[in-house]
Image (cartoon, rainbow, N blue to C red; front, side, top):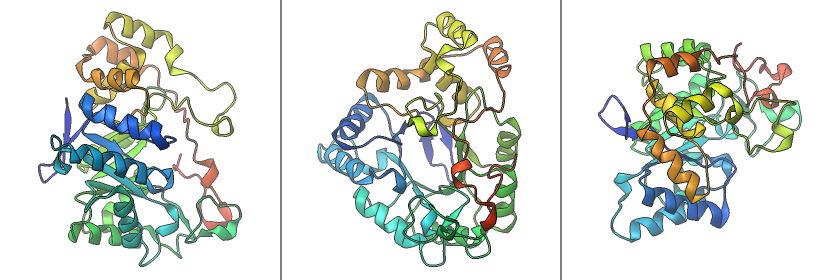
Length: 315
């Protein structure tokens, strides 16, 4: 298994288990199946509403005495309603309580948008805090304290553009160590990847398979299905692999981690085996031609120009 290495030598598996939209017994079983299949990297977030289930699964796994806390890399994320002064540490402590953990391996600012405390999904402009009311650099300074106090071994961001990331980097005492963003052959984000590499910021790809199980309300009309792209199917056939395995392997070839979500044992194992798929230069050139700046997660649902949030990705 390829790994991504942090500046202090800590390593994270390049293939992790995503858990967005998963919960209940189905997720609990999936966590156990994944860990027993070899996964050592699990991604969640406060807003997913599944930290307690993951915590139960992990506690039961650790109780077996064969796999220990230090063997598993756990990522969670700060929700948008806890950006203001004094709110970041309590939010992390709540996540730790639900996960039954003493620390997180990685804690991320989920979005570069701030809501009023207690707002899960904004309904009116009044649900937002402006960038002046909750400056992102002040939120970041609270993140830095979490690392200094050992509550999070590593800290970073999610859904941050190069512009927004560079603004934090220019003022940070501890630079973001990770940027988790939507990445796949239809949205390759080469400029952002180059910037992150130049600043020694690691990158994790979410929705690496296209997030086909999103709700209908989140989907656009006639959006592309990466499972049906001919060139990807051809590469998969030539490599004796599946299209999802090719997509995951592509991220690993680029030096990125990927967190495909699945709750079925067959797909969990198949995704993990993408670590054994080797792509050729010719394969990578074919995939490079697929880039079309297409986003499955547009971010439009959080744009509120009257509160200073528009063009979330600065595109």
